[in-house]
Amino acid sequence: QVQLVESGGGLVQAGGSLRLSCAASGTIFSINAMGWYRQAPGKQRELVATITSGGNTNYADLVKGRFTISRDNAKNTVYLQMNSLKPEDTAVYYCNALITTGAQSPVYQYWGQGTQVTVSS
Image 1 (tube, rainbow, N blue to C red):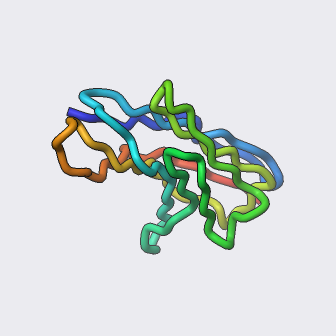
Image 2: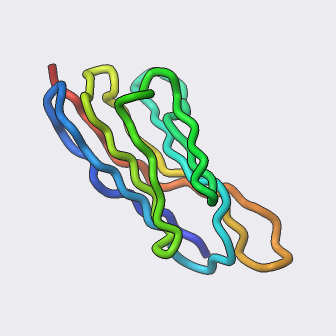
């Protein structure tokens, strides 16, 4: 059983900052890529940022230069530092991870429950 638990969402004014955290727990052999996605009301879920186990990062164009993804492999945790927030960043943010639970196990994709980020103008 693997769980991803997010924290750090909330309400912030435009121009402000928030830091999201997501900790993976349970029977974990290895974690490959981890990432953050978001879904605004009436829109499809979209990629925000990803990071590999080696630290290579990828960002959506809309957040480049404002958001920074990082991870602590020892803690099985991924972070998303969000600066210069805009009202259009308002969404539910979901953590995502590609995890194997054993040496011979396939890679499965896991999702967190989501955390609300609301940016007021």
